[in-house]
Length: 206
Image (cartoon, rainbow, N blue to C red):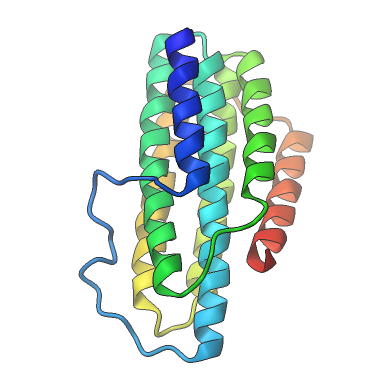
């Protein structure tokens, strides 16, 4: 447990300090930069800032859920998903820099809130824990699909990143569902959607 806490603390520091790394190539690395207008660039940066904050939340959720998981295999699955979410964090951060954007000022608050939610999910048992993964990834998939529609048509670099992230999120949800996830109550799903909406509105501007 002590080793897991140390690893979790190290990952939290890396998440919030902006030193996330990726073992896979950035999906946009070979995509040429488009000539975006100032308004399109600002809008794309806002959307990618939202995606970056979403990945900060995902890091916190998965770390807390892995920490409280009872089954070693469930813990392993959550840890693997967290590693891939860290890659998303690195990709979105790199794209923000290219768009002359910045990460959200509220990221530390969202990290702490998401970590608390992850702990609560884990305490309720592994099936509920996995159910949170399924519902989280379902909502993230919808969110990323919406961003594909909202991104400036010429911003093919951001689109490449969002598309790769969406593929990973779909796979994470499918793995959790196949592992025996339970369906979350309707009220919990609505609360999760509401919290995600607040995060989206906040991160786009701040």
